View 1: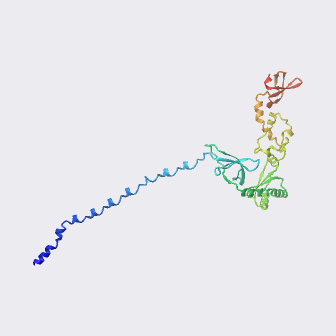
View 2: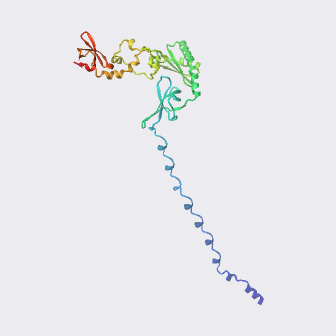
View 3: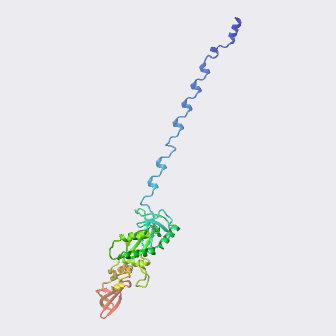
Length: 335
C-alpha cells in the first residue's frame, strides 16, 4: 500500500499542472488573426476606378476636336481635262502634296476621268464648300491606258460618221472622246435640226463595245475644236488659251469704234469676235470723260463738231469747217 501511495504521489495531477487551460493554450481569437485584420478590405486593397482611370471625357476627344468641321479650310485642286478646256475644282485633301502638272483621277458626270492639275489653293475658312474629292494620283499604267484609248478615237469617229450617214441623219460628228479606261465614248456633234439619236446610239454601242453619249456643241466650240488661224493672222484665241466664252454684243464694237461691217467684226465661227471683249473695260473707262459724237465743242483751232473719238489715246476728232483736226481731250470744251 505504501508503494502504491508513493507512485500516486509521483504522477502529476492534471488539474494542478494545467490549472488554467485558457491561459496556456491561446484562444482562437488571439492565435488566428481575425478576417478583418488579416485580409484587407476591398475598399483599401482594390483602387477605386475614379482615381487611376481617366474619365471618358478626358481619355476620348470629343467629336468636335477630332473631326474637322465642314467649314474648315481644305485644299482645292483645279483640274483640266483638255489642253484649253474649262478648269473644274475638286477636293484635294486626300492628296495634300499635289503640285501643278500632276495627273489625278476624279469622278465626273461622264464617269471616271483622268485630268491634269493646273493650280492648288486653300479655301477660305468659314466658307462652306462641297466638292467631289480627288480619288488618287494617276499612275504610269493609267497614263498608258489613256494614251491607248486616245489612239482609238480616230477610228471611233470614222465609224460614227459612217453609221450616221447610213442612217441618213443630218448631223456632223466632229470629235470622239474616250474616257481614260475606254468605258465611255462621247461624241460631239453639230446640227441645226433635232433628231432621234436612239438608233444611232444603239448601233454604235453594239459596234464599239462602249457606252456612247452624244453631246451637241455650238459654232464657237466647233471652231475651237477645229483650230486654225484668225483674221489677225494668229492662231485662234479660242483654240489657244480661251477656256470660257464671254458674251459679246454689237455695242462693244460701237464703243471701240470698230467698223460694223460683218466681215470686220465676225470670226471664223460666224459669231462676233471674242477679242472685242478684251479691251471693252478700258474703252468704257476712257470714254466716260470724253464728249459724245455730234456735240459742238470749242478748241484752240476754232469751234466744230465731234465726229470721232480715240479713247485710248485721249484724242477727240473735230470737224472744223472743211477739215478734221485731232485735238487732245484737255483742250476740248463742250459748248
